[in-house]
Picture: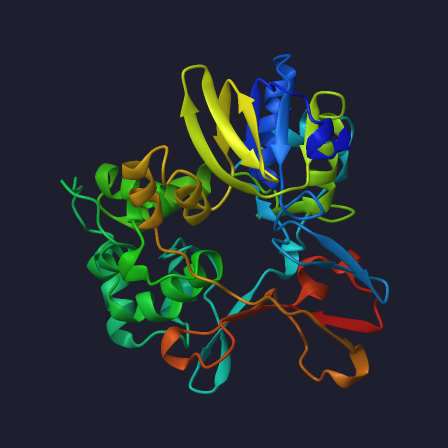
Length: 362
């Protein structure tokens, strides 16, 4: 892979990709498999975007996502095409997979067998301290729900309330999704975020029936997957794979123009021509770039809401942490949240990433 200044760039690349994160790198990779050259424009001095693995005191710490869902095979399939990267995939320590929720000032374990918002086992939810008798009875009656096909998309909040009530929304659905999406469950699309549960509702009526059917068919593979040397192995592998096919410009794109022959991008005060343009960057950045070339599309992109989060990892001597760390971490419901929305106990989730004498709290 060649990294050049704008003056040394290929004059007419066939494809320009704005953004050098996982989306931009994957785009360049799949183009290269078709024999198509491209140019990635990335304003920072590194590739990989939010995916970044750092080492501290012998700990392998993630500055961005620490894993991906094993149930979604796209990353595994991508790794399969990147040399021996598939052999570096590791699973989370699911023998100790347990999630706690803050309630009444203490950490209460999530019932075993919860599949996102729905229970797959009766005994754990009926004996759980997390729910009141009213919610437990609501779960028992949910199994008799009739199949339902909604005419409009609904929010996650509405879907959960319809099936399980307010308590499951507050102590299960909202905290689980807050760590991934950061937004309000009342504004998150059920069809987009939890499509399989919408499908369960259509087929079975009961979400509990749906997850129980899925559990019968599911494998015993780990729920969370990552890479032995950290998630950055994926973006580093992609960067290596596109070497020779992709030109990298570490500069900021200033604007786009649609021309008779394709697109022009203003990069470092120069216009660069391309047959095709791929925007692999946040919606608000794409909106700024398309403000003149496609104003209507730019307005739609600018209207997409974003939420932000600060990720902090703290490392302590193990002897100074009295908590047994007997799970993957804890979630904080919105009504109890002051500063922290969730925490991961890295020692338990991926034990190989932290030496035994230390504790890493993410």
